[in-house]
Length: 333
Image (cartoon, rainbow, N blue to C red; front, side):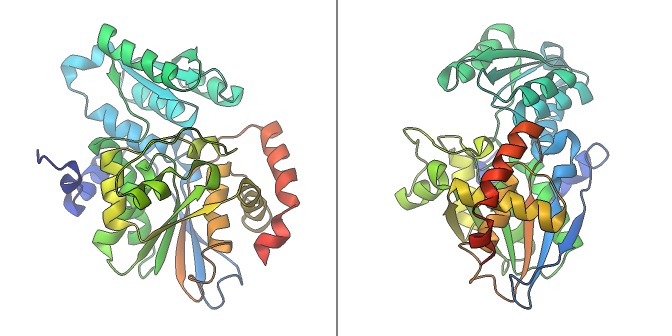
């Protein structure tokens, strides 16, 4: 393998991994959303919320699980997560005939903890931050389990790239693709696929103001670690980026923009009212980015929006929708 892992994320490698995963993941639909926000343009939603486990995370987790050598599979897999990745790792382990012991933050939404258990995982709860990762690393080092990182690694990126590959195949001629950004695992894969299939298609990343790690990494010229994060979009709140994701974003993403939490909640309201979709904040951020800071740039364009997930409980969803109702008028413009 090359000393530069980013060089291995070729279109041929993306296509090969997508073909390998195709019998096991869903080819999620891409459907238009009627809107006047883009003038004569068009908005197409890539509905990854309908993927197994409710988010795109299933692709990267399964890509990693299937790459584990046979002689290591008996030890099983572990993961560190606030929610979606733990659910996906549990599902991928079960689909691959392995056990899973996932480490989740003790502040994680109980709905997501329950979903991980439904997928067959043993759930270990630890304090947020280093303690969560330290326990997963202990399981790796002392018990021989394979640690599946929530957003880093070639196998993860090749898995998430399938989202971009499907979108570009299903909707040729896009002018731009908009992706929410957490640790960078989704946008790095999507952007690598999009740009290698159509270099003229712009890719934009959306981050919360309180967790703008990739935005600040780009400004710094290297991946950075934030002192802390402050956003209700917990799926978009990893405090650091990794060299692989940073390198791919540096090469393939045109720009990053940030949103307030109020705007993210308003994006969830627009999804519910206009698309009839109940999404989590991470997905709401992508639509809010199109309707907010990117609107002028996307006028009269054909725009793909990645609807990344919908793992949220009813009570939490209701509270965020109520908050969003107070700000949706400003977002609609």
